[in-house]
Each structure stands twice: as C-alpha cells, then as structure tokens.
Image 1 (cartoon, rainbow, N blue to C red):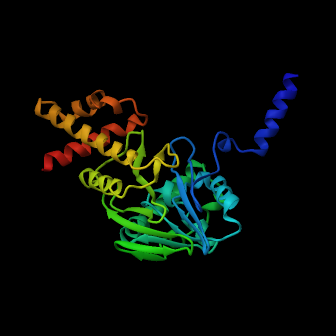
Image 2 (cartoon, rainbow, N blue to C red):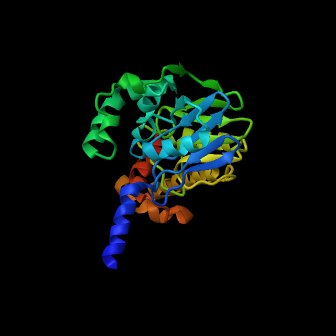
Image 3 (cartoon, one colour):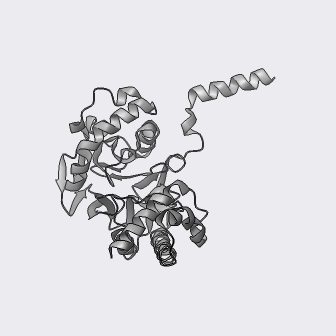
Length: 304
C-alpha cells in the first residue's frame, strides 16, 4: 500500500511541478484586471486584459511558465501587447525578452533603461549559474531583447481599448528607477518593489527613503481600491492601508534610529539592535533586510 501511495505521489509531481503547489492562478481585482501571487515572498505580477490586448507588469523568470498559464487562462487568446517593469531588478525584468519574442512592446522609463543595460547581462549569467530557470529561456539571448523599445521620462499612457494604464516614473525610492502602473478608472495600482507588505523592505545606498515615504503618501492619497505590491500578501480591495503601513514602518525606524544615535549608539550597534525597537513591525519576515535599511536611514538622517 505504501509503495502504491508513493508511486501515485511521484506521478503527481511529474505532472505538476513542485513550484505550482499551493500557488493560485489569476486573482481578479476588477473586470479585466488581475494579479498573480509569486511563490512565497517572490515578485507578484499584475496584468490587464483589454480589448486591444494584454498588458503585463513584472515577471519572475523561474516562475514564468506558471504565470503565462495564469495569463492565458483569462486572456481569451488575446496577445500580450505591452510589458513594463517597476524597476530593473531581475525578478521584475528577466521575462521581458520572452514577452518581446511573442510580439510585445517593452515600455520603460529612461532611467530604467539606463539601469537595465549594464545589469541585465550580469543577471543572465547569475540565473544560468543558479539553474532556477530553464536554460533555453536565457541561452543566446541579448540584452537588446529585454530593453524598452518605447521610453518615457515622467508618464506614458497605454490604451488597451476597454482599459487605460498610466505608467508613472517616481524616480529614486527603493532603486533610482521606480515606476508604478495606475488604472485610473478602476483605481488599481501595481507598484512592484515600492511596496513590501508585512515584510521588512530593502533599502541601501541606491535608495532614497525620504522620497520613498513621500511617494507612498502620494499614492495613498489617490485612494486606490486595490494595490498589488512587489512582495508580500495582497487581496482585492486592500486599498491604501499597506502603503501607509510601510510609511509608518520607515517613520518608526527613523525615529528609533535617531534616538539610538542621540543616545551615543554606534552605527553597528544600531544595525544590531534596531529590530527590537520596531514595535509592531519587529516580527515581520525578511529580517535579513534590516541592517542595510537601517544603515541607509542612518545615512539620510546624518546628511540632513
């Protein structure tokens, strides 16, 4: 009997890849507007199915096949017409070339293009060495295939017929090339790594935490109905709360770091001790991100 059960389980795992277990398909946010939850804390994907085709925002290469399946399950055969990214990081941009091969137009800010050009080839080599994605998705591919074919400085509007998507560049927050996708009719936001929901966010010397907070407040002021974060849980109708929660996280960290510094604590002592001072946020996962974020907040406080 045990052998029979084990054999049956082995058969299931041959049919269904391990990564697909416990993962959902397309999560409907509004008519024609969906998101796909990344495995664990991996990057989430947003997409829009319009009369004139599909728009995709962010995609993580190791999970590409499952995400494509989710898109196709609700797209009704419509082609992927536009692809955009929240910033240049690999868990956001490493599917660009695969969408472009299908005829999609990659759209991005001029700053994203500047960041992506030197970054992408290095990330390809990392992905190939790591072996997380299919080699045929990377071998022989050129950076030009992943680069934006259409660039913009501040804002560009994509018309899908039944839906309008605004891509808006907010400059330097988590990284220097932050872009969000806003659906003004449906009041839905795709924000990529601008937002980590109930996870410690990552800031470093590429970041501007003060501007990050300003952008979080600005977006919350738009009264979004649903916000799809780069990382962390989301659900239809979550509204502005996760944006404001992350702003409070940074405000709490800033005030506690200032107090610790004024009490004579060194930067190393602050980086080691700040988690215990974060109150309601202390037990969030991704604690590995705390030291770098604390150092950047300390750096910005010292520069004022």
